[in-house]
Image (cartoon, rainbow over all chains, first blue to last red; front, side, top):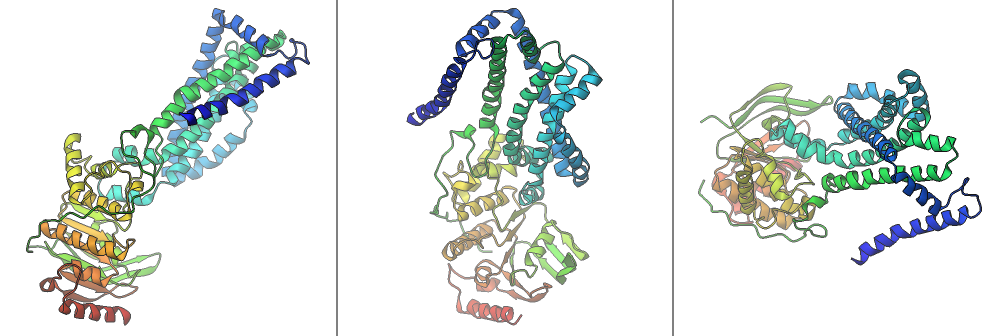
Length: 280
Length: 239
């Protein structure tokens, strides 16, 4: 209980410092240049009273969720293939290296030329940015699988689907979730950038609109909404999933709270049972 | 009755290094055979060849068993699964009903003295207990042939002796056919009906000792077995 309260306090303190710093800084500038928390809050209240705000929010959320899901699916699939097949690894590794080194802004510029305004560029830029992160991490995870466990599973003729579910997936889960959290952060950043630069809908588009009209308080309010959306997906969906599905070798999973928990391994031995002996 | 497994003039090498040369031996139903030899002499390779994990370059291997259980040198348990789930793992494709699988796995854990530890994770168990889970897993497939590759080598002497005695009672009770790999002559004598002594690389069979009529009681070797122990130690030292 005390620990939980401490954790809460650890969260609150930096937020409080940020708010105070923000408020103090805003005192030195006119609201049109640097609005304070109160001006931003009133702009936010104004925004959430408008139907259009929800349309823009829905567009961005949809693009983010669809783009991220596709990136995870494609990236993980490619990663498993690369991890399993040496030739696939040799073929895709340099391509992924190239893809991860292309700045997102360059992707956006090219995608805007190719696909024009609309859902295309934001979705594609999310996929081309996030999928390689997943692929590289999952491939490494597959390559790091314990060959002894796989040999044991092969010896006992455990079917490929059971091997995947009980050995491969748990072994991969740590890297997979780490990559997914990283990719999620990238998703919102590049998505809003793409919407800002070339879209006719979405929070990024509204942010660019606010910039053009010098509605700085509205721009701040949109930034706040984008951050909240990102945190909602991360802490509302991804981290609870991680809590439930990430297996840590040597640690009981959190989903199994009903099982026994002990600190470290046992060093005493329960008595060996007597087995009835029979003459051979 | 045909032998459970037999090797005929088997030759095996890894990366141009000859590991086994001209090995011929057979394991008969119901007997426990130990493969003894210095570390790295290829005795584990013989076991893996018998199990079908490795294939020989030269020679024939005839296998007449239906289901085999393998206890590896390391327990090879899934760290993210409980003791019970680790045993259930090998039953997933064998029994469709999960209740039946868990019942069978729990009974086997009880048999190896781990009743009450079903929901412990490997990291929460001691080394000896982990190997007992691995033994329960090997028995879960109802094997007609059990292969053990130095399963207790990482454990302390006293625990090793008590586990050997326990293993012998388990194998005897079910009249299981087993091959046990060890570099410890005493362990082999306490457990086996026959000992196959290997030379160092490339592994060749030096001598076979039939000790089924000289079984020990408890941890102590009778004088006749002590004499054989001395003979085998001399053989190994002469290498």
